[in-house]
Length: 305
Length: 154
Ligand SMILES: [Zn+2]
Image (cartoon, rainbow over all chains, first blue to last red; front, side):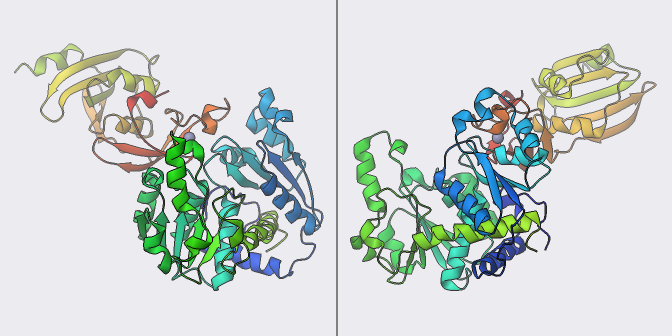
């Protein structure tokens, strides 16, 4: 499979065999099959909005395999403020690097960048639209834990209306033979676009407001944050959000073997007392960001075949 | 029959006739086709049509529009038909088909879409579903789905 020169913008562009190939390469990278694979490669890391974790993850990914990076970390100093066109910035930068990572508040910015770049572009988040490396590391983590993705019952809980992570993961899971359980307050149910997409893909999914009803059957519970701003009334928020938090008490209604995931950073949606349990895999999940991004950088630059 | 009269009023010898346009879309369609400056154009509006109720007609003299140019009409008037006239006779009659991709004509309703924030990013939409009177498109950039309405024309 040839990924050299290919941009990674959206899950819509990835076919199942390509996803599987990236996951396989991630496994190999994690097991040290490609030490120093990115030596001599330079990554331009263009963060038009702050996201320390994602930026650090990409920067360490390339450094640990011997490559270099340069970038814009402070959006106030970047050309976005000066009215330079996005395309001109990209055309300039792609002369100095082997791949570009871009995070941008405007949705579709990574796609627009990839159209004018002579080097592969990796989308590290465009507004609420896509963040494919996050989704790939989510899939990788599930596969690493269970040895497979097919056959699992995967719960997505929290803000399913606005949450990019949940949208993107549900689209990716539709390639697999899984059951998706969507758990959210009525106000924050998954948008109709995504429901249409899931229905069209023939995947099994259910929607519910109650974790108690479905908790025993879940293999994975992917928790996302419910933001206060989504509610007009703070009291309503307190009342609703409380039912979607993971505490030792909630653990009682869940399958004892359930694995709990979270894209991090979290606020209070998972109680710190959960961290020590074997069920909690969100830190391992975050660490998987490194080998996933290394595999992708290696593949698109041609350093890994 | 009274139906013959309006047709004779602006019969053309050579050019393109766009018939069965849903009223009152004629002016919008001239706009999106970008043909305003291409010679003499006659517009008839609000004719009775047994097929679609009220219809508009556009006749463009001495211009032969290609199919790829006219398919965009399907967004606002799926029943429209095209007649190519040469020396007073219809030499080609054709339907319009929904295009798969729509470049430049529509704006994205998403305020944080890149196409609304950088002047060098033009719009592009993928047609996802097209029912009789409802066309759903997806922005190629921000990936949001929208039902096409006339106010989305730039
Ligand atoms: Zn858009």
